[in-house]
Image 1: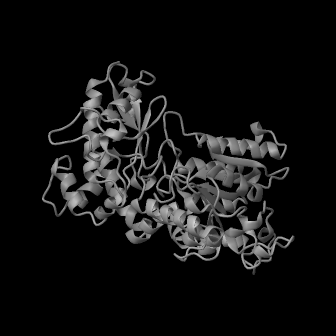
Image 2 (image 1 turned 180 degrees about the vertical axis):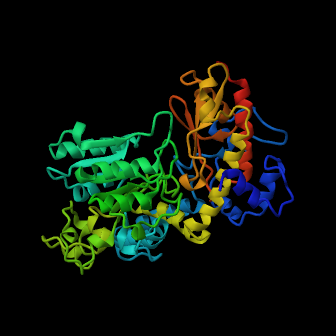
Image 3 (image 1 turned 90 degrees about the vertical axis):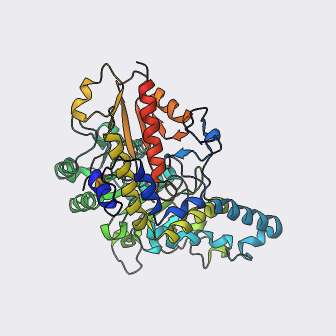
Length: 479
């Protein structure tokens, strides 16, 4: 179902026949079951986000800004400040005893367990398969120690050519760690000429063609640059049928799209928590390890994967006995190295509590589909919009096309806008103009702005305001 169809269906009871009608966002916001969650977040005011005198009648610089940048950094839940202050108070009053005797029943020695169930629900896993720990790229290295086990005949890593740079650095360094040649061991896959996103059929074809030599298939769940949501289940199944291990970088997928990692048989996954999980800048990341690798009943060699170990991965029942022999914790917790940083953990807790209250990612996805469909519909109605087939005609006037798939089931919240003519400073003028009007997206130089309406705190009025601001700015762009 295309964006306009989604929007038309949602408006059936409204009496509004034109999806471009200014009354649309008001009606949708009034009938939004998640609308009250917005009050759980600190929405930055316009003046702190770079807005100046571009105001409509009745607006103030103290009004909330239009923040469509949750794909880069989620907004701060109000409860996060309270939770952190509680822990600081306990630290000041209980000191070391807070590890074991916590007045709010959150002893620091088991703090990681506070978010396990919520994270399991968010990524579609058993509780034992997830743990909050570390940071994204360090966790990726950590997982690749266990899951990238190249042999003379099976040693390649298949991934998207425009993977986030940190992932690419990790891949190359892991290949070099095994004394392999990156030029033969790394297998980046690019879209077809003239296209911006990878076709699933091309990914599956590469797996079929190269499968016997691929040790690891590792794509992003949602591609950071284009916003493409890969068909994770299909890719996982096809790769494993060819004997490949499958991992996923879920930085832009976790908290954004529905995931069923356990049911899909994914071998491992990593993610950060500061985007759609709203867990603070550089917040505590997470990992998933499928239970087939950790189930005590399993006698397969995969149940004894090599891994780096540390004391917090030791069985918690005997961890503080300080024995010299490592006894692993159950499930993914065995991959933990150091004790959990409590302040980032409770920042994550504050957000996961809101996910639980909202009914989980499935409920949020329903609103997300509608928010992004509304944004997509407005953008495609713009006189500045250029279809992919007409971008060659953009030499003499400013415009934009959308890199993200038009199919709602192949994207999350984010839409990536490519501004044209390329490398003529159009994007920077638009980005600066949006900021002056109180609209925050994020830029990817030289020509892309990403906009991501987030269902927990964005409104349909936000989407309309962003579109109107974009139209104003484009009318003023100088080539």
